[in-house]
Length: 174
Image 1: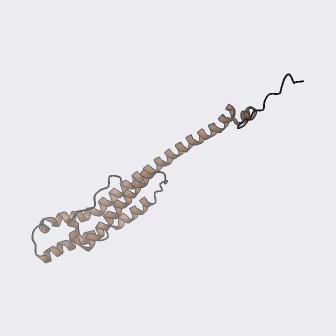
Image 2: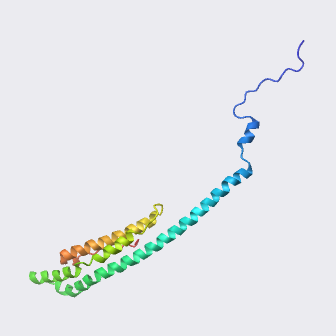
Image 3: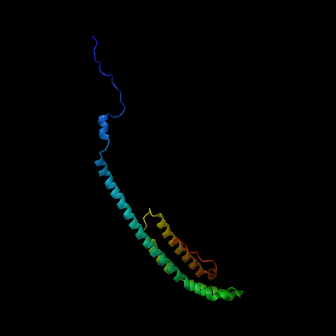
């Protein structure tokens, strides 16, 4: 006798069964429980970053203002001396007169770079988060500008004739 209802053939399935797939799909509540804290954390992170960036930018604004003021103060005496002796220096003058004019410029430049060092230290002390590369570049530009002017003033103090040559250019990033 033959069996009227033979059992259905076995099926081979690849992957989890329907019953177990139900457990792999998260419920909407579980998605909310995970996503809401992550979203809140991201918003808080952005707000904190904006606040930190704002504080850093304000500190760098003060640094730039102090840098420009210190450079102006440090170079004004030398510039005034150069303006005073330039009419004579521009013409062919005897070597001893030219040396005397250069010594006047040199003496005006002696020690003029000192105040720049203090401003440089305070600007270098402005902490900038590594992620804020534009602000780090701005701080570096201010430090470089102070360094260039300090080196130039020291060079003029050693050789007054260097004061009549080109001076360091302003960096608009500072």
